[in-house]
Length: 345
Image: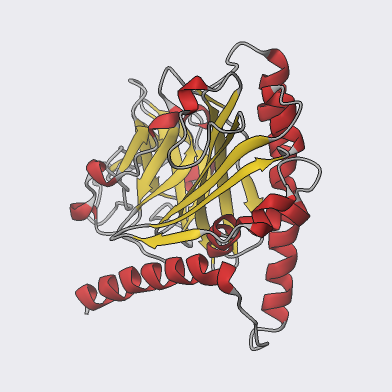
């Protein structure tokens, strides 16, 4: 179900303070906090004494003191102090997880710490680039399999129906996508030329007629999905269009990084980065509030879908050509998990 040797998002960077933060990642309870120099720390959320969650404790210096009997653990997970007792048994320790702060998120490695190479953190440069402006919506706990989010993102035809009043348009269902599988990702590409823009894009880009629109999606197993979307003037889009000559342009990237909690629940982290109208308060509101409402439309569908799947796990499903990318992504992830399990055997 889960690929453990991978970097997952544990929290937004701004969530992490000197106060313990409890999260569940891949079924394991984790507590996060910052050291005095601001460096992030992630420990097993369990005191080795009486199994009290360490997230109920207090950060002291660079360590974390259990709120039950005061055992003090350092940032490496070793117990360094037991009140009322000089001797600290060598087995008095908890697991420490590798963590890295990057792209406005706190990344955690849940697998073999010897394999935790920060160079393997997904490249989400849009989150920090000065030419792009990133929104940081709160994490949303969802009662659904995290893989359903990638399935949803890879099939953009749902935009026409689920998001009809915002980012949907009929043109997406009329264009068969180009689906490509690479060594570590699946990509779906669509150009919708000389058609009305979605309502949100028309408002953001001041389009008063048709436009050339693109909708590209990339899935990078085990969990990263990236939507590349936008509009330019008619005649400026398409694979060979000169987009730089367009008078109007909407360009955005939606990043989805859900972290599994259980087999049927996840913590959904997502953000929107845009390369236009950085100083427009109305566009700011649209992407900090309006686009979150768009995603909430997805949340309702995903959780309803999970309820039916949990109640009817053996019910047959019919697939279409638009499911090909999701199937390819699932198979890619399955192969990665199978390879990891073989390496452990």
